[in-house]
Structure formats: C-alpha cells, structure tokens
Length: 296
Image 1 (cartoon, rainbow, N blue to C red):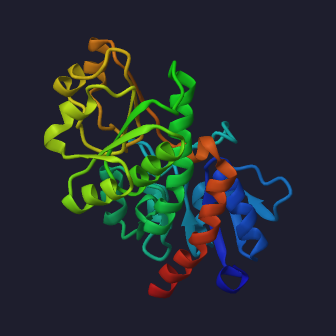
Image 2 (spheres, rainbow, N blue to C red):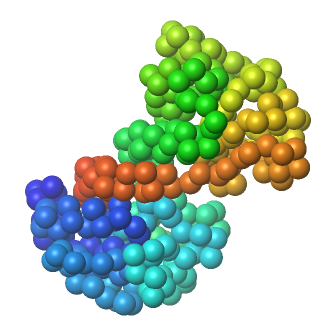
Image 3 (cartoon, helix red, strand yellow):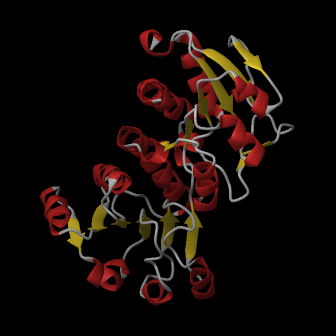
C-alpha cells in the first residue's frame, strides 16, 4: 500500500467500524488523512469538524460504504454529534479535481454530483469489493435466519432469489450447512450451474411454485419480485430475509397483511464482520484511488 498512497492526502467523511479499519490501514500505508465523523484514537490523522475544510487539500474523498440517504446525509454512528451532508456546498468543495468514493448514491444526489463535475465511484458496484463482501453478507443473512427460525438451517428448506454475487455465495453457504437449497435464476446457464452444484434450479416463471414449501427465503434482487400474489403462495410461517438494495424485493405491506415475517436486512458486512469488511476496503481501495488519480 505504501507504494500506492504514501504521502497522498485523503479525506474520510463519516462511517462505521469498517471505515475505522480502513483509516488504520491507509495511515499505516503512509497516506495523510483528514477525518470528519470518525474517532482517530491511536491513528495519525487530523480530525476536523468541517467536511468542506477536510476535502480542501485532499486528492480523493472517501465516504461511507453504507452510502448516503435521500437527503445526502452520511452516517456518523461513532461520532453522533457530528453531522455530514453531501449538499451543494460540500459537492462544490469536492469538485471535479477529487474523486469521491462511496458505497452508493441515490439517483438525485448522483445527478447533483454530476452537475458539479464530481467523479463518483460507487464501491458497491466494484466487482472485487462486491464479491468479497458477499461472504459477510451471506453469513449475516444466515445469522438473522438462525435467530428467528424455529428449526435449524440444517435440514430446512431454503430458497435464494437471484444468482449474482451474493446469491451464489449464499446458496453455497446454505448448502454447506445442510439445507435443502433452491435457487431462482433468470439465465439458463445459471440454472445449469445451480443444478451442477447439486441444488434445485427454478425459473422466475415458476416463482410461486418455488416458494410454496420453503421455511426461509432469501432475496437478493433489487426489484419487487415477492409480490402479494407470490407471498400468498408461501407457508404461513415462512421467514423472508431481504438483502437487496432499498426498497428491497418484497412487498412488505402485503407481507404484513398476510401475516408473513419479512425483514429488510441492509449493511450486513458492517454489522456482521466490520473488521473483515474494513480490511476488504483496505485491500482494494488504494489501487482504485491510484487509478482514478492517474485519470485526472
């Protein structure tokens, strides 16, 4: 890391234990850090209260992996007295000369950033980070299920909706734990892979049939696929763990009306294994920062 960011001035704005772990690694690699909304105990970093002042001398800005809300607020759970908002003033301070690294931005905020020439890198869409994060995400989703199911994962009937990065890891984990695993996937090639793994493949056209006898359903698809009609086909005691991007893939109002237990579980890497999730960022972010700086 030292060869990549040694002496490079960076601004860190908010975050949780993941960003603390990242901050430690960046400092150890020689980066010069200005930090807002994070504790700096034992880390050689300058702590400021004004985000605009923090980014002023930075070559890149790092915001939380958990992203910003619809009003542009960045989470600061470890420093609750500090408020950080990606408003017009802060976006203008970042400007076109400093890439902004963040988990994800709401569309309106992404448009506001683009209007000010801010180069935004959404880390949740970076393949190497997303694949690595799928492990703590899957473990966190299974932990939630274990806490709420009246039966063990071993021997239970589980269904995974989607066979992307998280869906694949989740299906493998459930299978390793002894569950009877079905996976709903769009592509025929994915369904062939699912069958080759010894799991049960389902096309989306048979979703209502696929959910019928499942004890637990894990959704990874960021579109409403668990509609009222599909939910009505589930067991009365089904547990639904939705790990898709907001608003999730479940009609939660219909689930409540039908008496089905459904939860939207976001940010699982930071909640399940924040140190591991922070080390994932530390492993991949320096090269991403260097690549963006070379483009400027």
